[in-house]
Image 1 (cartoon, rainbow over the protein chains, first blue to last red):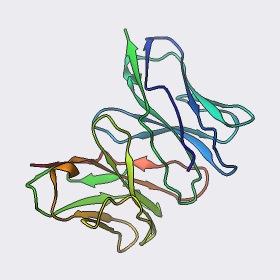
Image 2 (image 1 turned 135 degrees about the vertical axis):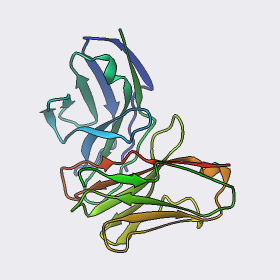
Image 3 (image 1 turned 180 degrees about the vertical axis):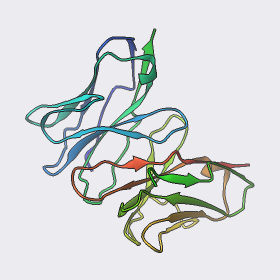
Length: 110
Length: 114
């Protein structure tokens, strides 16, 4: 299972764009990159998933370089409600469990 | 249902007692996962079901932990002779089990062993 490395914590201000980068040097050919968001007292919530290049949805964008050894989650114009822990995971979806690291604790300040 | 449902939301039990935690996945999701999360940590994998069978139970910490999914939908995580170290939030997730989809998690069961 590919391991991931991401910053333990980040601070930002309301209205700013936040980029959280995750390293996954041992990613396998059939692995996807998935990001989850977790608020206190809730289970992690799926944000976005990608395989290569760029993926965008209504919540975030995910940038993946050609070598796929890293990925960047981009949250546009964050608000206080984006304060949460963000997890980067790699793995395939064919029944393989994903390994969660400690995640990145994002604090959005007013 | 619309989401993954876990019951109870909170459970307090005495050391040495037996507990059962229930997970009702999204209808049609063939894959079901149990994770355990301690304060300040990421979720830790326990066991994964594909249909009725446990495809991977390598995360179960010891033989006091057991999980079943007899009809391929609802799953029950069973913990015997609970210990204070078992206190954590137990999360259940389900997925379609095919490429390109992430997990949907429930809100978890907070287990406190006193």
